[in-house]
Amino acid sequence: MKNDVFLNDAAFVPAKKKRNPLIGSHIIILFAVLFVLLPTYIMLITSFTSAIEANNAAFRWWPESGLTLSGYIKAFTRKTAGNSLLRSFGNTMWIYMPATIVGVFVSSMAAFAFAKLDFYLKKPMFAILLASLTLPNCIGIIASFLMFDAIGWINTALPLMIPRMLGSVGVVFFLRQYFMGIPDDLVGAASIDGLGEIGVYFKIMLPIAVPALISQFILNFIIGYNDYLPPLLYLQNAKMYTLQISLAFFAEAYVQDWPLRMAGCVISMVPLIVLYLISQKYILKGVAISSGLKG
Amino acid sequence: MDCYGKYLHVRSDAEKKARRRKILRRNFIATAMASPPFIGFLLFTTLPMIISLAISFTELHSYNLSLAKFTGFGNYVEVLRSDMLWTAVLNTLYYCLSVPLNLCLALFIANVLTRKIVCGKAVRVILFIPQVCSSVAVTLMWQWIFEDNYGVINTVLSALNIPKIHFMTDKNWFMPAVLTISLWQNGTNVVLLEAAFANINKSLQEAARIDGASERRVFWSVTLPGLTPTVFYMVTMNLITALQEQTVMQIITTNGVGPGYRALTLVYYIYRMAFTYTSTMGMGMACALSWIVALIIIIIMRINFKLGQKWVCYD
Image (cartoon, rainbow over all chains, first blue to last red; front, side, top):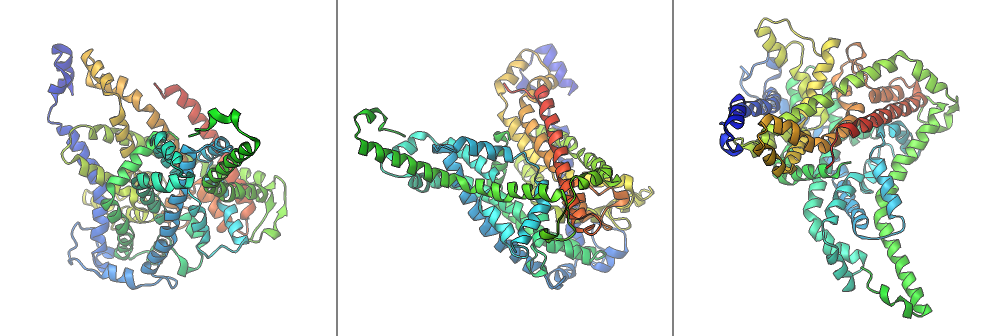
C-alpha cells in the first residue's frame, strides 16, 4: 500500500500500471472462504464419524475409527413423536412449493398492474404496501396464532399457504421494477391490436419476465423452506411438521448424539445447497438487483 | 395507451357511455390484478395487529378468545415493571452489534472482491452458501463447534494449553458466540455491496486518480460516499431483522433462556410469555409486549432515518 501512494504522488504514474500481485487481497479472501468452509467441513466430517468417537473423544479433523454412515442411517430411520425427517421433508415440499409458485405468479400480476396500468386506487394501494414493509411483524405473531386458532386453521397447512399465495410485497416491488423497464410502446401496440389487459399480461409480459419470476421463486422457496417460527406455531401435530421443526425436535431428542444431529443438519441443508448451486446465477443476480429498490 | 382522446367532442351520448363503461371495466380488471397482495396485507398483517391491540388490554391465559377479561393498561404496566424486560432490551441491543460488525466485514470483503482475484466467481458462490442454509441447521452446527468438551474450538484451545471456554454456559461468552453465527451468514451483504461497488461511477474515481489522489483517498472520498445509499438500505434491513431475532436463541439454548437469561431477546420473550409462561403471564401480556417492542423498533428506525440524512449522499 505504501508503495502505491509513493508512486502515485511522486511520479504521476497512471493508476492502472501500478497493480502489485494482490497477495494481501488473496490472503483476506482465503480467510473469508475458510471461515465459511471450515464449519461446513466440521459438520460434514462429524456426521460421518461414529457416535462413540464423536461423543467421547476430542474432535479430530479425520475420525480415527474411519468414516461411517451410521449417523445418516439413524437420521433417516429414527422417529421423533411419530415423525421422520423424510416425511417432514415431504411436508415442506408440498406446503411451500405450490404456495410459492402461486404466490410469485399472483405477485407478478399485481406488479404488472402497478407498473403498466392506470386505476383509481393505484397510488394509495401502492403507498400502503410500501409502508407495510417497515412494519415490524412481531406485533402480529401471537394474535395471528389466536386468529388462526379461532377459525380452526391450526394443524392445517392453510396458515402457511394462504398468506403466501396472496403474494408478497417484496416480490411485487422487485417485479414492478422489472416491468417498468419494459417499454410502454410494447404494451400500447398490443392493446391497439385488441389485446386486453389480461391478454397483454399473459402474452407479452409474462414470457419476458420468466427469468425474473424464476429467480424470485427460488429466493422465496428458500425463505419458505427455512421458515421456523410460523410452522412451529401453526403445526402442532407431529405428522404435519416441516423439515425445520422436525430437525429442531430431532436435535432436542438426541442432545448428545452429535453425528446424528450433524447428519440431520446435512440432510436439511443439501437440497437447498444443490438448488442454489444449480441456479446461483439467477439467485445472485436477483439478490444484487434487489438492492436497487432502496426500500 | 389512449388513442381516442382527441375525438371525444364528436361522440354521441351512447358512445360516451360505452367509453365510460370501458374505463370502469379497465379499472376493475387492474384493481383486481393488483389487489391480492393488498388483501393479504389487510387480512394477515392489519387484522392481527388490531386483534393484538385488543388482546393487549385483556387478561388471557388460554387460546380461547372468549375467556379474555378486560384489564385496561394493566398488562402494559406489568410488562414495563418486569425486570426481565430490561434484560431482553439489553440482549436485543447487544445482538444488534451484529449489524455494524457484519456490514464492516462485508464492506471489506466486497472491496477486496472487486480486485482481480483468482477464482473470484467461485469465491462469490461459496460466500453466499451460508445464506441458503436454515437458521436451525446453522445454529446446531455452531453449537457443535462451540461444544464444551469435544467441540472444535475447545479442542484446539486445550491443545494450546489455554483453559476451555464454556460458550454455551458462560454468560460473557454466549453473545459473542451468537454474533459469530450471525457473522457466518453474511453472504447477502457481500453480494449487495459488491453490486454497489460495480455501480459506482468509474469516471469519478479516474478523475480523482488523475488529480493525484492516493488509492486510500479515492476509496474514502469517492467510492465510499457512492456506496452510502446501499449501505443505508442494508443497515435498515439488517437492523429490522436483528431487532426481531428469535430462532437462533430458541435453538441454541438448552435451558430455554441461555446463561443468565442472555438468550432472551425481545421477540423470543414475546414467544415465551405466550407459550411458556402461559399461566403466569399469558397472551394479553405477550400482545402488550409485542406493541412495546414495535414501538421500540419504530423509534430506532426513526433515529436511523434521521441519522441517515446526515451521512447518506444521494447525487
